[in-house]
Image (cartoon, rainbow, N blue to C red; front, side, top):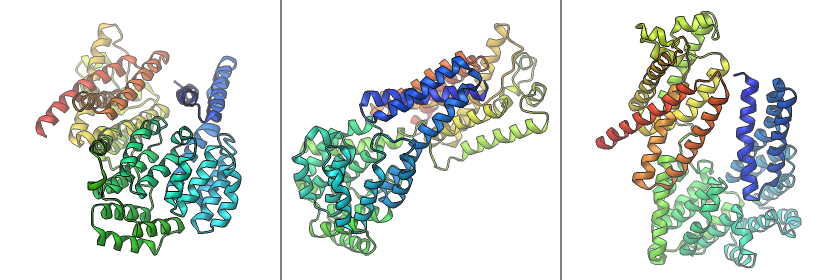
Length: 521
């Protein structure tokens, strides 16, 4: 497989889900045009000139899809941190890569929020007036933002109750403002029921920050200080220090620790911006409602379910995702693969068959002749830079979750033993099918085994704990396995047999390790 083919696969595997998601949600229609156009160009170029199809479509994918999506994620992170000036500067560049879905107007909107944050409310209001007259999501957000900046929570609720309800329940920014306003005015039951109503939509759109913000409101207004602190460690780590202290003080106040909370709020107020200053002033004169007196039995059930969902997400949501936690075993394995690759380059080249053979590539007939060490050495060798890059990326995405869940010892056992057993099974099947002279290298067998282990962990969570989060992640794993099978079948250089044995062996070993893990805990 060459880089051109890999680019075509990347384009298809990223554009098709985005196209379907935008079409089904009936939002962000600009992405339908972008992703659809890139797919059409990739298909046409594949027919006309396959050798450059990946380079052309991949370049368009990078410029008009990846850069805007990554950049806009950064913009939203800055907005959640209330760093509106930096968000505006970045949005000013990004809007030209995607001049649809309201991106052209976003820098001016962020400029108004920046001015409001500094207390220049009259100027901010003047900018937002043009949006307020429009029956759009941005127009409604403009009005809600002004109410929020001045902590006019009761007026915000009154205004929203006069709007068309369906329109703002589907808008994550308005929902977050509305549910916070319910908590600020003491309607904890309304806050919890509102969370139930909006969480499915927020999960569907992938807006985890908005979902966890609303959960944080519920926990803070119900006096759960430690749970709020737990959310700030990861899902809401982008919150500023002042904002974190404000919500932790709110939780303390709701828990009845009035003196401690007031001292914390007064300390934060001295270094607050205009909106936070107003929020603190409101909190000092309008303490949170007492949850022990206000919550109904049905609301308490919702509250405990929210607590359970957060614990489940801590346990299962990290499956196959980017993580910046210190997973030393995964980094160590990546390092060993890179060192082995350096040996290949120094001794004759990573695509030289003789060099790979001398370093320990898997050749079934050689293994059968007694060279059993090849079962282990082969999983640290790679055929070319692209092979190494794709496998190390896969290990970085998949390995940390298994390492953090099982621990370093069981993780390394699963990685190494699954790789060796899979290589052994591959050798036996190759000899019996007359392909004993085939050569096999790469960490992908062990990486596929980690996918099998991940599937075992998630299946256990779904069946034994009835975890909704584990079930959703398991579906994602099955989709990845399906895509990998199609990839293996269509690319002749890829070992379908090796990947399949790795997946099955990893699933079996994962279940064995989980039984031992459960017995020891």
